[in-house]
Amino acid sequence: MTMTNYAEGETKVKKQSFLPDDYRPAEDEPFMNDRQVEYFRRKLLDWKAELLEGSREMIETLQDGTRNIPDVTDRASEETDRALELRTRDRARKLVSKIDAALRRIDEGEFGYCSVTGDPISLKRLDARPIATMSLEAQEKHERREKVHRDE
Image (cartoon, rainbow, N blue to C red; front, top):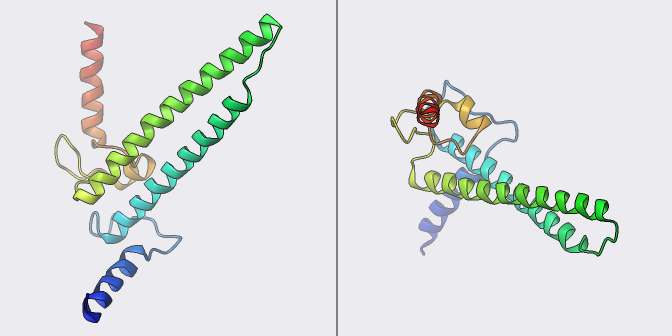
Protein backbone atom coordinates (compact mmCIF):
# COMPACT_ATOMS: atom_id res chain seq x y z
CA MET A 1 0.00 0.00 0.00
CA THR A 2 1.47 3.35 -0.99
CA MET A 3 1.62 6.23 1.46
CA THR A 4 -1.07 8.06 -0.51
CA ASN A 5 -3.43 5.07 -0.39
CA TYR A 6 -2.68 4.61 3.29
CA ALA A 7 -3.45 8.25 4.03
CA GLU A 8 -6.70 8.04 2.05
CA GLY A 9 -7.70 4.87 3.89
CA GLU A 10 -6.80 6.43 7.23
CA THR A 11 -8.86 9.52 6.43
CA LYS A 12 -11.81 7.35 5.46
CA VAL A 13 -11.57 5.43 8.74
CA LYS A 14 -11.31 8.63 10.76
CA LYS A 15 -14.21 10.17 8.86
CA GLN A 16 -16.34 7.09 9.44
CA SER A 17 -15.48 6.71 13.12
CA PHE A 18 -15.70 10.40 14.12
CA LEU A 19 -19.08 11.15 15.57
CA PRO A 20 -19.75 13.68 18.34
CA ASP A 21 -21.13 12.09 21.50
CA ASP A 22 -24.17 14.35 21.39
CA TYR A 23 -24.98 13.65 17.72
CA ARG A 24 -28.60 12.77 16.91
CA PRO A 25 -29.85 12.22 13.34
CA ALA A 26 -31.92 15.16 12.12
CA GLU A 27 -34.64 15.39 9.46
CA ASP A 28 -32.91 18.39 7.84
CA GLU A 29 -29.82 16.43 6.78
CA PRO A 30 -29.56 13.98 3.86
CA PHE A 31 -31.20 10.64 4.74
CA MET A 32 -28.72 7.91 5.68
CA ASN A 33 -25.67 10.12 5.24
CA ASP A 34 -22.35 8.86 6.67
CA ARG A 35 -23.03 10.31 10.11
CA GLN A 36 -26.50 8.77 10.38
CA VAL A 37 -25.23 5.39 9.20
CA GLU A 38 -22.39 5.50 11.74
CA TYR A 39 -24.81 6.60 14.48
CA PHE A 40 -27.08 3.60 13.85
CA ARG A 41 -24.15 1.19 13.45
CA ARG A 42 -22.83 2.22 16.88
CA LYS A 43 -26.31 2.09 18.40
CA LEU A 44 -26.78 -1.47 17.10
CA LEU A 45 -23.30 -2.62 18.17
CA ASP A 46 -23.76 -1.16 21.68
CA TRP A 47 -27.18 -2.85 21.98
CA LYS A 48 -25.71 -6.18 20.82
CA ALA A 49 -22.82 -5.94 23.31
CA GLU A 50 -25.28 -5.17 26.11
CA LEU A 51 -27.45 -8.19 25.21
CA LEU A 52 -24.45 -10.52 24.95
CA GLU A 53 -23.13 -9.35 28.33
CA GLY A 54 -26.56 -9.96 29.85
CA SER A 55 -26.61 -13.46 28.35
CA ARG A 56 -23.15 -14.22 29.76
CA GLU A 57 -24.26 -13.09 33.21
CA MET A 58 -27.47 -15.12 32.95
CA ILE A 59 -25.56 -18.27 31.95
CA GLU A 60 -23.23 -17.83 34.92
CA THR A 61 -26.22 -17.37 37.23
CA LEU A 62 -27.92 -20.47 35.85
CA GLN A 63 -24.74 -22.53 36.22
CA ASP A 64 -24.09 -21.29 39.75
CA GLY A 65 -27.72 -21.74 40.73
CA THR A 66 -27.82 -25.48 40.08
CA ARG A 67 -28.52 -27.08 43.43
CA ASN A 68 -30.73 -29.66 45.02
CA ILE A 69 -33.59 -27.99 46.88
CA PRO A 70 -35.47 -30.39 49.17
CA ASP A 71 -38.61 -28.26 49.60
CA VAL A 72 -41.01 -28.91 46.71
CA THR A 73 -42.45 -25.39 46.75
CA ASP A 74 -39.02 -23.75 46.74
CA ARG A 75 -37.86 -26.06 43.96
CA ALA A 76 -40.94 -25.26 41.86
CA SER A 77 -40.37 -21.56 42.40
CA GLU A 78 -36.72 -21.87 41.34
CA GLU A 79 -37.68 -23.89 38.24
CA THR A 80 -40.22 -21.21 37.30
CA ASP A 81 -37.53 -18.55 37.68
CA ARG A 82 -35.14 -20.60 35.51
CA ALA A 83 -37.78 -21.07 32.82
CA LEU A 84 -38.40 -17.33 32.78
CA GLU A 85 -34.65 -16.63 32.50
CA LEU A 86 -34.34 -19.12 29.65
CA ARG A 87 -37.24 -17.50 27.77
CA THR A 88 -35.62 -14.11 28.31
CA ARG A 89 -32.31 -15.47 27.01
CA ASP A 90 -34.06 -16.91 23.95
CA ARG A 91 -35.66 -13.52 23.22
CA ALA A 92 -32.23 -11.88 23.55
CA ARG A 93 -30.75 -14.45 21.15
CA LYS A 94 -33.45 -13.68 18.58
CA LEU A 95 -32.88 -9.96 19.07
CA VAL A 96 -29.14 -10.39 18.48
CA SER A 97 -29.87 -12.09 15.15
CA LYS A 98 -32.16 -9.17 14.19
CA ILE A 99 -29.38 -6.75 15.14
CA ASP A 100 -26.94 -8.73 12.98
CA ALA A 101 -29.41 -8.53 10.08
CA ALA A 102 -29.67 -4.73 10.57
CA LEU A 103 -25.86 -4.46 10.56
CA ARG A 104 -25.79 -6.45 7.29
CA ARG A 105 -28.35 -4.03 5.83
CA ILE A 106 -26.05 -1.16 6.83
CA ASP A 107 -23.13 -2.85 5.05
CA GLU A 108 -25.29 -3.42 1.96
CA GLY A 109 -26.63 0.15 1.95
CA GLU A 110 -30.22 -0.98 2.55
CA PHE A 111 -30.57 0.15 6.16
CA GLY A 112 -33.29 2.69 6.87
CA TYR A 113 -35.47 1.80 3.91
CA CYS A 114 -38.77 -0.08 4.11
CA SER A 115 -38.49 -3.66 2.85
CA VAL A 116 -42.05 -3.43 1.48
CA THR A 117 -42.25 0.01 -0.14
CA GLY A 118 -38.59 1.01 -0.43
CA ASP A 119 -39.44 4.35 1.20
CA PRO A 120 -37.26 5.78 3.99
CA ILE A 121 -38.23 4.68 7.51
CA SER A 122 -38.61 7.72 9.78
CA LEU A 123 -35.58 8.64 11.87
CA LYS A 124 -37.77 8.67 14.99
CA ARG A 125 -38.82 5.05 14.32
CA LEU A 126 -35.24 3.97 13.58
CA ASP A 127 -33.96 5.68 16.72
CA ALA A 128 -36.60 3.91 18.84
CA ARG A 129 -36.29 0.58 17.01
CA PRO A 130 -33.11 0.39 14.90
CA ILE A 131 -33.93 -3.17 13.80
CA ALA A 132 -37.12 -1.98 12.05
CA THR A 133 -37.44 -3.23 8.47
CA MET A 134 -40.72 -1.52 7.61
CA SER A 135 -42.05 2.01 7.73
CA LEU A 136 -44.71 2.62 10.35
CA GLU A 137 -47.44 2.62 7.69
CA ALA A 138 -46.26 -0.69 6.17
CA GLN A 139 -45.91 -2.24 9.65
CA GLU A 140 -49.46 -1.21 10.60
CA LYS A 141 -50.83 -2.58 7.32
CA HIS A 142 -48.94 -5.83 7.92
CA GLU A 143 -50.32 -6.13 11.46
CA ARG A 144 -53.88 -5.45 10.29
CA ARG A 145 -53.54 -8.19 7.66
CA GLU A 146 -52.14 -10.57 10.30
CA LYS A 147 -55.06 -9.79 12.63
CA VAL A 148 -57.61 -10.43 9.86
CA HIS A 149 -56.05 -13.80 9.05
CA ARG A 150 -55.79 -14.70 12.74
CA ASP A 151 -59.49 -13.89 13.30
CA GLU A 152 -60.67 -16.07 10.41
